Image (cartoon, rainbow, N blue to C red):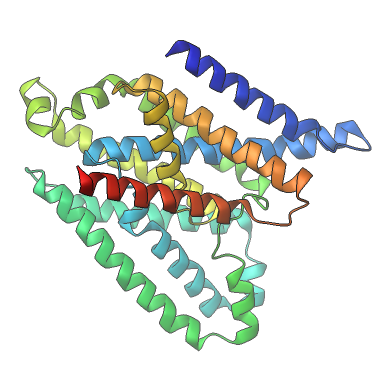
Length: 313
């Protein structure tokens, strides 16, 4: 296990090195500063998505589910559409990045925590009801989005389209001072709770019998997931299957239920995929394709594979 993590760490370091130096020309002070801030953005997003997915799958006792099932993607798209509809294309484009990020983070977090607070009860059925309601709200948000998009001016809709798809190439580095401390704090809490998550992975009844305050830890874990996924979504946009792709590979590479090694593995794999993939698409392919589309395609294939394998079992 240690050897595998060490190999992944080496691959992640090589990906970071390649991202920083491949194709670099001109003033190295400018190149390293420019690429360094972009690298930090990719690492923050990779860490937030991987940790939030692992924690969410533990809380739901299901390795197929991801936080996007709660309607985050649909809510994010609805929020962008409402902003364009209310402010117009020019007002939307001129909105301060910090204000826009804070607004998105607040609304995404408030909506999900309201859902948790109203649905979490004494039994596990409430958790599955929460997931079902998340799907229903996702459909509602998409319907409202479709209605508003039909009412938006075509010229303004073209501006909106740029904000509806995940973009790992255009992360606003001004937001790092807001996103980085939040992600670091959440990941530190997740690491501190790794042994608690090991117990929660056994199931509600077993965790309670071992003396765990299950409801409190469940709410804390869901709040943690909310903060991480809201931050990553506000930074790069909606990403439905990336977390599923990373978590599935992590559990196959490190065949353990202990969250310490799983956290490390998922973060390293996520960095390799994002940083290494962005290096290839930027430096080798010349942005001839989009990393987010490829990642979502591979994640969708993994999702279908997991569904079919579970059906056969």
